[in-house]
Amino acid sequence: MVLTPRLEQRQLQSLVMTPQLQQAIKLLQMSNLELGEFVENELRDNPILERDEGQNQEIDLPNDGDDGKAAVDKTESDQQGVDYDSSASFEIPTEKGLDAELDNIYTNDSLADIGGGQNSSGADGQPNVPENALSTASFSGSKSGGRGFDGPGVGLEQTVAETPTLRAHLTRQLALGLNDATDRMIALFLIDQLDGAGYYNEDLQAVADQLGCSLGQVEGVFYNLQQFDPPGIFARSLSECLALQLIDRDRYDPAMEIFVENLDMLANRNLSGLAEICGVDGDDIAQMIIEIKELNPKPAMAFDHEVIRTVTPDIFMRALPDQSWHIELNTENLPKVLVNNQYQAAVNKVAQSKEDKRYIQDQLQSASWLVKSLHQRATTILKVATELVRQQDTFFKRGIRYLKPLVLRDIADAIEMHESTVSRVTTNKYMATPRGIFELKYFFTSSINATNGGDTLSAEAVKYQIKELIDGEDAKKILSDDKIVGILKTAGVDIARRTVAKYREALGLGSSVTRRREKAEPT
Image 1: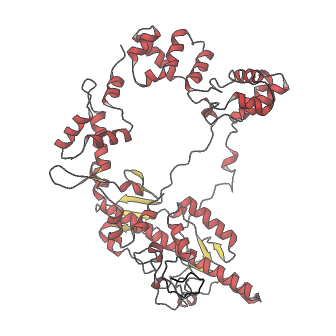
Image 2: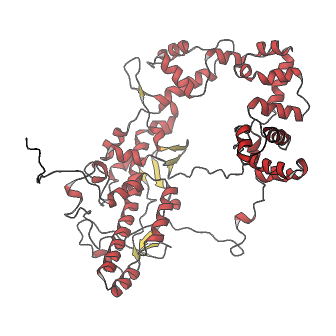
């Protein structure tokens, strides 16, 4: 073996994903919110790309066999585009006719799933997309709009009442609670260290060292801040938070002090032991529990004015009179873009250098690929959702007891796509159904064998049965995990006790001992 430097020529094969295919994969797994933000950035950076305002003339997207010029010849408009009907519905009986006559970059043989392939790219490594085939393509959903009775009117944000933040609320109290300027500076520093619930979790000694003052001065300001509104603010534990509120109500007597210091016994429903150490009877304990429930364990949450965002479904589903299902995309949330051919042609005429012409060509290719990727994304989501509904048809008609066990491969094989594609499609995508709004991943559950050798059962369906048994149990006959196993096996479910315990804990249900204490009336 020669240990000297030398040159060798080797022939290797490696999997390479082009930037365009990476973008297509990225778009597929985005939620509609993320997709809208991505498209907005593309509109800002790409001068060839333009937002579709609904004014473009609708034309057909050329097939793979076309030379790419047919679409251009169909209209004289300078801004041409395809109005892809992403709200087209598919009924379960006709599901086999879903496949569109477009390049499917998400199939088993595509670079999008396996990372490379000779049939998906040209000699330069770029995808085989006709140069002009997509220059007139656009992606758009349904066109809708609204108008007020008296012009544009007042914006919604102008009608919302101004609500103070927790910091502003506490700062306003400093003028009355603290007279010394140094104490106010310390107080402002401490206020900024509160967590979202209004608790203080920092070390006061570290604060004193950082501010260059004595620990006694910091503690004096801190205990003063604990008297501020809302009651319970600046507590360092749940017990202290409740104690501060009880003090404010003048209800912090010795018995209540012991009660608050032993909240773990309340959590375990050990009411008899709690009554004994507090020196009260059962009626007093019941009344003390009522008082504790009236307190606010997170006093700062009253100032949390963050807008709650509801889930916007990506797919709508409704029943048809013939017992089939109508499925469509929610086009209101889909971005609508097109390629501005007029601007591209005008700029191309005045471009002189090779760098300018290359830049224009790159932007045109990027815009065209984005349009096609958006189109294919919508088509793929609709395919996956339709097959999911077809396979879970019994669940939608009869309820969660009939949810079938399902894995990604079942859907991938049915629609002839790769499992990774199905996984991306079902991530952060929601479907509005007659039974509620579900994430598409909800319908993929593990299977549990049946005792009689029949069809396997979905784990979600078994969880529901366990919840039904526990919810309906008699307070005097609490079901143990072993008893639940026996009942389920009688019903045809082959399940182990540890699996029942795991599902019960996942549902947030306590053990039989805990439930017995919870359902027992205090004595």
